[in-house]
Length: 110
Image (tube, rainbow, N blue to C red):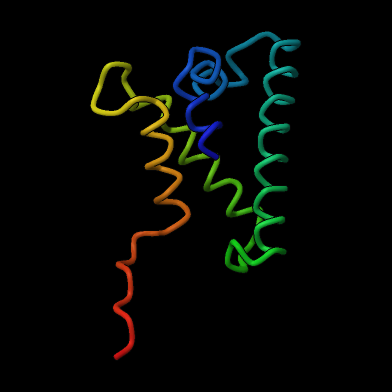
């Protein structure tokens, strides 16, 4: 997940997620859709493996994979080189949020 998020801050990743399929020629459109499909399938496999080994809570793997892809892809829109975080740090922060959620840590039982 960190690798994917970091990749979205590079020129290729930015083009991959910012260019709409309908804005390119048909052959390029096929390549763009195929590349996005490969990424989605890999994220889906990671989620399914996590569900199976217990490292990810039981959930709809398709929703989880689309959510992960969307959140990490959005780095291409807001991350700025030379900004507050490096691409790697930004990807780590988004990944941590995805894995840990927004809920505060529960206090240990007394």
